Length: 554
Image 1 (cartoon, rainbow, N blue to C red):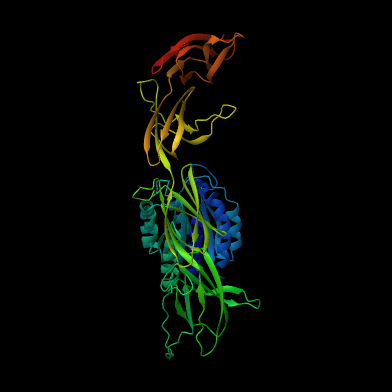
Image 2 (cartoon, rainbow, N blue to C red):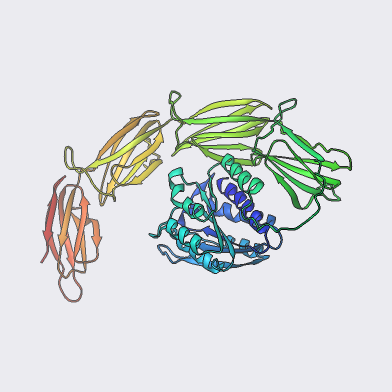
């Protein structure tokens, strides 16, 4: 739902920019690898494909719109930027088709992308607008703030608006300058409330771009009286929602079938407002926090005031994620998924939302820890609930030997598994990560921490409580065997002991003249092979836990 909110905001930006036929607008879309990140069990790029196709249907006719994409063709490339659709009128279907085929994989050269977009729009000669939608920060050693200042100084009337999807406040400051230094707006699209506030400021009250006022001498006309007074409430007999900007009105002409016809003719973000429309029949499509929709028909008649009225029959809910019932602060890692009807959205730490009277499903997760609850909402009710997600934190560490040196490596693989084994001896994985000193969120209870480095493994059982951070140290009981064999084609480490068939167990093999492996203590045979007619050679090696053994085979 976060990305849906971002593209709802994008629709507002495009609609506002498109109101001026002379303007050209370029969407610069992040298609870097991070777009495979999950939101509510779906990838961000999947939601983008679906949502953008819908959003572009509301772009005003005649809008000259283009699309530039970065990070979609190559991994690790800072030049992977493509003008997907040149700016022109009627490009909505082409943009939708291109986005549907995106396969995110690369870096985030957002600064260079905005610069190229400005050049294509001929920003030094004509009025131009860029709308950057990014879920990450610059990763190609460029300075977005410096670029913004340069574009502003050279541009005729150049503006960049930036939508930061899921960025923290601190991260947002690193890209907000692209908007602020060009007279644009930065939108932190992290929840519906912030989205509505941004839309109110930019679409309803302050258009993105204003034409130079044309001075025309006219005879003043008498003031127009309002002929429509719209109002809404949460529940029957409840107070008016008044200036509440969580309420969004879209006014359409009513078609012959009694349904909305054509594009909307007015948009308002208030619980109650007054407007003036020509006599006729209309449909008001009214949403509360983009989650609850009502449609209200009304008719404007000469000399009368129409009064479209909406009862959302809903309540307001606040849910706070906590690791334990006694935690004073919400847990920012706690994801709260809210579901009712066909609507679903995910919040972090604290969820504040409206819900229709009835059942609301809550799912809270911190890492693999998960809880589910169902709450009953009554119309007009204000509900505050804690969602306790009983998770602990494990600080992973490993040593080579009891009391010996610590394993200081980013290659050590830690996995937390269930203590019980299945019939085949395997155990259910709970969480995993690489590197000593890493932290893992896990459910409270009994677990086993395993560690693997090279050909050595270790494990230790432990118990963690909800809200507890516990350091768990695994002894992998191993040493390091380093082998040098000049001219070798391959080096294989074998166990010194033979099985009943006379075979030695292969521990590891590497192709080249050098090989180093972490192995359990014991005696080994190093087998070296060469190319051509050179006879293979063997050498003995003994490894002790916590020590390094070096062998040279000449």
